[in-house]
Structure formats: structure tokens, C-alpha cells
Image 1 (cartoon, rainbow, N blue to C red):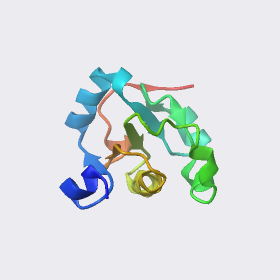
Image 2: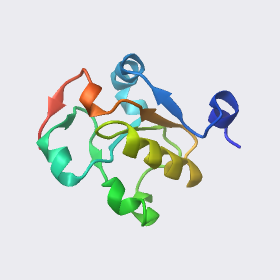
Image 3: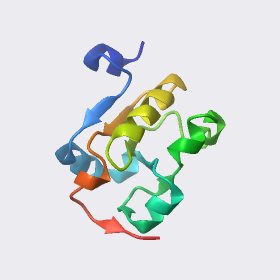
Image 4: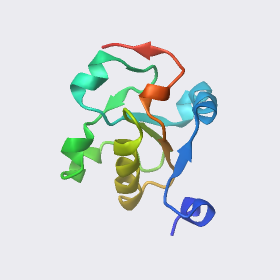
Length: 116
């Protein structure tokens, strides 16, 4: 059982906009993953969320997540918080020690949106 499980009753922690802002200021300490579809991601994503892996694809094929560093904390975002919640459960089960879910999704994100 991981430390987050002991502290919060689950293997990851939901974070607020304010907590995300603090993490973004220390970007080098975290990995930022957007789990929306490629089309959603290209239409606009949170600045700094440089990794995009579609939840609908990796939820059945976890090997897509192997390129994510197990030893570096990861922050996950989607459209509303639902897919990121599922992604956080998967990442935790795969052995990630520090996993954070931006629980309200990009719809409630108050930072810079960029397009690719």
C-alpha cells in the first residue's frame, strides 16, 4: 500500500486549480499527462501538459504507459476529471508512487491553453 493510499484512502490524490498552479511553477519535478483524445488535445491543452496518451486506447493496453517514468510524480488531466480518474487508478496499479488527478478537468482549468 502506497503512502497516498494511507493518507487519502486511495492510490492517488485529487488536486485543485490552486494546487496545480503550484505544481506548474515547479514543472521540472513533475510529468504532466493529458489523457484526452488526440483531437481534443490538439484543439487546446493546458500549457505544460506535453504528454498526450488517449485514455480510451491505453485503458485496454497499459503498455502504452510504459514510457512514463515510474519514479517521477505525475499529474493527469482530461476534459472533466472522469478519464483522468480512471487513468490515475491504472497508473497507481502499475507502480507509480505519486499520482495526482486534476479532478475538474480542462473545462475548469484557469491557466494558459495552447494548441498544437
